Length: 236
Image (cartoon, rainbow, N blue to C red; front, side, top):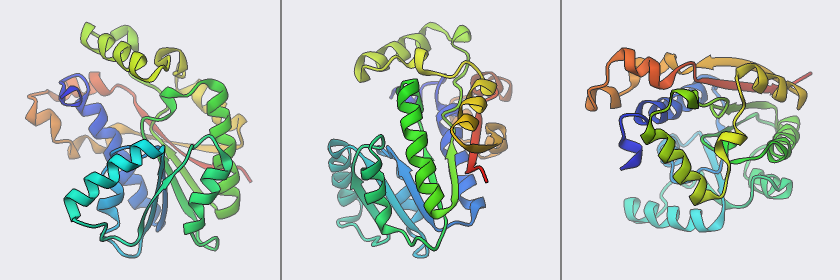
């Protein structure tokens, strides 16, 4: 119910659809989703049998997800979808998940909503792990977790939501966030990546939540702001 709220739906929907758009544009058929949670993307995309999709998340999350998938499909019918238990901050766990891939083909690594829960040091660890994997396979890292809408403009509902998330996860979300896009770019470049920017406004015409919630285009602009996706490759 929280995710259906006026203040959050367009942002969350746009984030999901930007990742999907960029995966499609990449024309890459090997995809690794980090901390995939209950996202349905893997189940959806692997209806295309040419795509190999690997999700990695903590065991308790994946067990719940398997139950949901089994309820939907009665069995996991897509033999090109792999659910791997692991910690994305552990290099060996990521390398094990990548054993499903062909090293002669490039991969896409995506995450959605992960980085806001990581401290700076944890972001560095994750970036190093991803850098190593992309150095092996080639390909791109797609992340929309670059900046959040400015908390100064948050109403009480959004502030309360953030506080509740912090209590639930034990993470200091506002402290973990990059201050701005430039700071994020400098960070990722320092970790050995080339950064390409793409903006959420590219999928405005694909959003359904604004119409369902009677949100005007002007308010969509305010709610999403200058939210950006970074598409990153290892520097030559």
